[in-house]
Length: 213
Image (cartoon, rainbow, N blue to C red):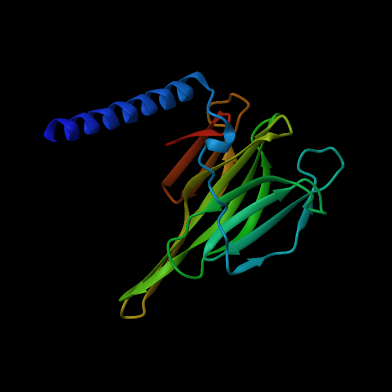
């Protein structure tokens, strides 16, 4: 009887090993069909608030694209559409929050060079109010090259705004200036966030990549 049980267990183990081997061979060979791949369900949102579509010609083709800002269950997103009809989403990017009352309140379009444009997204990350109030604002850098929307890419930049209110109700605020300046004279401007003697520099490396100083 013991021999019979051991034989069954050994047979099951061999069968399982053989199935696993065939499965991994199919993965490595690329034969695993799409229907067998894991499908990730798109997230369902319960509360959605959005701005109107703001028209702007981003790629200088005399046809307006559209920008919108959405808040979905506490997540903050920026959308770029191919037209004011919003037929197609060209890009969507999420901005991270750090407390309540977060909001995107300003967008500026600038040229880093003749071939590179940047949208500066001024985002108030929110505030926390435990014992004392602390709030921050951060700039996001949305770039595209050669007027090609396939190159759209967004990066998180430095803080440009800080506020604090202490328990004695003393309120402090620091605003940074956001400018473009070509420090190394390579015809590609850097993004500079500064306040007094404090400067934070973002250098664009291409293909949506940045280097921070």
